[in-house]
Image 1 (cartoon, rainbow, N blue to C red):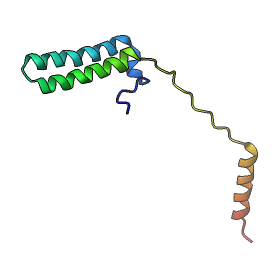
Image 2 (cartoon, rainbow, N blue to C red; image 1 turned 90 degrees about the vertical axis):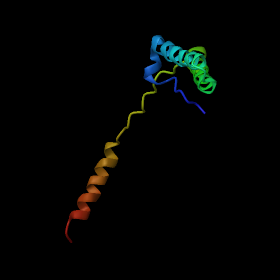
Image 3 (cartoon, rainbow, N blue to C red; image 1 turned 90 degrees about the horizontal axis):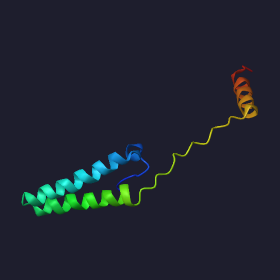
Length: 90
């Protein structure tokens, strides 16, 4: 299960990725100093995971362009002709 999508445009800049990791690990240190090891471990785990995803294995893929939709004029013309025939009164 992937919690962080490294292809998201937010993570394109290095300083953003470093800031996210630093805030998470800094918050873990703050929680340990404050005497709450449960939240310190939790914030530390998030920091380690974000370091792994955003710095260690960061390899963004370029965005894939959607395949252009090609409309066949012959089919469109046949559909219009069929619709016109249906509209004609007998």
